[in-house]
Image (cartoon, rainbow, N blue to C red; front, side, top):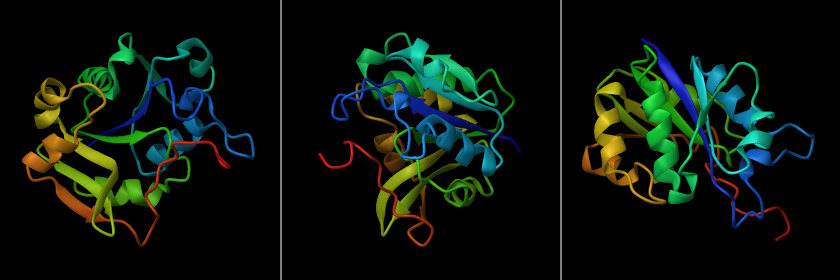
Length: 186
């Protein structure tokens, strides 16, 4: 059983003030490195990073152990990032995909591993935090084409996951589950 890791990092980051693919932690570590490390640390191989806004600059921040997926229509919303990443994943031999947004730089690999545990091509799962849906999400290969057909605009796979009985995996004991929408202090 193999699982591909996907980092969604194509957006312009308008609320943040710049594309989140260009953001680094206080210690200088790019968020992209952190996302790839969390996926790799949970056993995901390969790891794909979906880039759009400022792609040339952002691609220089992608670690060598990850592959860039270009999202030409990134302005059309998060759905395009997910669609392009799942299309690229389709060219791998992975049975499932674990998907994280780039704006969760403190996501521990333990959360990814818990969500990915026991994954099959038919799996659908998502991390929840005290019952609230969050990331990462797991989408088995059997769902990739249906997910790419169902997502639109800035909506991810949440509606599909809910409609198709995704397994909720409580992870609040491992992490808070919050993403970062704005720079600290704003």
